[in-house]
Image (cartoon, rainbow, N blue to C red; front, side, top):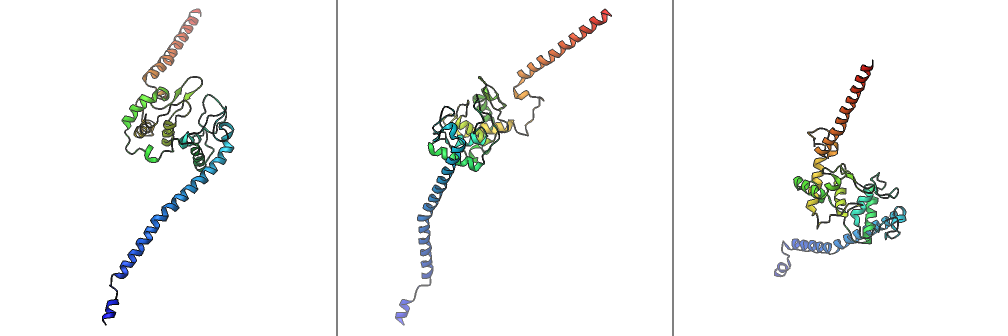
Amino acid sequence: MKKLSARRRHPLAALVVLLLALACTGGLYAVFAPADKAKADETAQSLAIDEGKKLFAVGCASCHGTGGQGSSDGPSLVGVGAAAVDFQVGTGRMPAQQPGAQIPRKKVIYTQAEIDQLAAYISSLGAGPSVPTTAQYGPDGADIAKGGELFRDNCTQCHNFTGKGGALTHGKFAPSLEGVSPKHIYEAMQTGPQNMPSFPDTTLSEQNKKDIIAYLNAVNGDDTVSPGGLELGGLGPVSEGLFAWIFGLGALIAVAVWVAARTAKAKKS
């Protein structure tokens, strides 16, 4: 009887064995699962690069070179980053219809999935700015007043103080920012497309960019009203006064000439 009692298992022994088994299983998962996930991500990235290279060969290589090294018809894309591709292709500026002083925005011909593949391929040529996340350009935590101050200091010289755009030299222009997605505005500040200077985080921080985008959304949003009526592109009272002088005074002169002509004709009669 004593031997049987000695061999009898403790009531909690089965539970301990089960917990040990689960712990071992969890340990094995912790060892192998991250490796499997990393391998899957690497495979997906490689596939995206391969597909992007095919798209690049068809739509971009004729100007930018077969390896993105650039040519007489297009600049090098080595090191421009995924953000530049997402902006240029995502706004329809690329592929360009024809060379010119400035490439205008037009209808987008690639899907977002194809744009991502092109961006993956260009990123593989050299490190550059990545596509921003919603948290980087979203309205949460943005300071609209600070954004207005930053925009007036850095951007109004070309885009005017509400982002309506303006003319530059040699046939170039600063496009209107009205209706441009926050992501593309952020990418433009990151990469400096065409005539625009770039504003890396060392010049305008991530928070600064978020504030500027919030300001543009505020002044160009549907809820914004202009108490002065017709704003003439938001150029301010100087342009509105000039409009009044040119057209108002011109109308008065036209009326005066008409009255004088009628008076002279009446006297002759």
